[in-house]
Image (cartoon, rainbow, N blue to C red; front, side):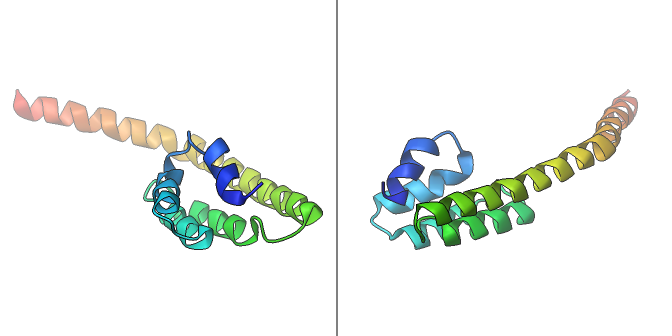
Length: 111
């Protein structure tokens, strides 16, 4: 199955894929269209790098090569997810407290 069709079938619920679909419908070749998905403002720099690495190898080899490529990208994504979860645990409470205190300060200033 062509990579364009795979993306269309399985990526519709992913916000960062919207620029890819627009570019593909406009007739752009897949590699250039994929670059537009990589540039999505929804993604952080680390996610953009992972997406770039995935896009470079997606559809570029035989079945076994694709399985290996997907497995590698999956394990790299899991590492990134674990790191993001740790950051959220460490910094999430701080940001919530800053919001609470900021709101309280604004309320005091308005009174």
